[in-house]
Image 1 (cartoon, rainbow, N blue to C red):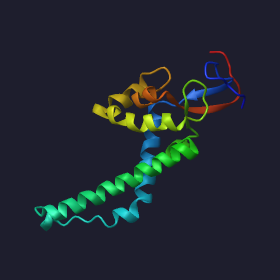
Image 2: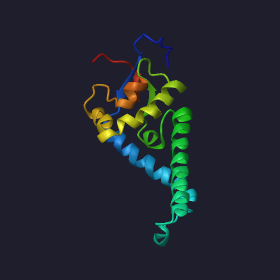
Image 3: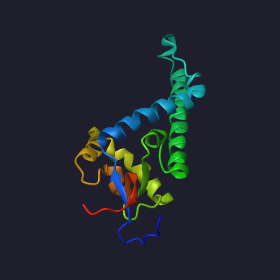
Image 4: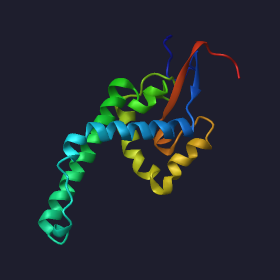
Length: 158
């Protein structure tokens, strides 16, 4: 892979990953996440007779937040060290800097993680993946990232 300066165009061919592949990757990520967090989730039990007990409900809520936190940490580690989640890897897709297609920086990954919050509002941030030329969701646009599949061979003119 050739070195590309920030304002130069990349010299390799890429395909932007669209909505349906990213949606399938999301499903795979949630299955993998459920399996990886299963040991913790196993201890989250729901006792319907204790629903009115505030101490029980607080403990249950804490366990659920810990499980979600563990899943979030797993996703962040995958982004950082694999440039993708398990679902994206299945489709050979990677999260990259939208300008030069190099791996996204730590700052970009942090912004991307935080930007999921506004992206989730009515799922509009995700729906725009299907409408955008570069297949970027709001979280991608805010972090200046893209999800791509690298093609073999040199960049071809469109």
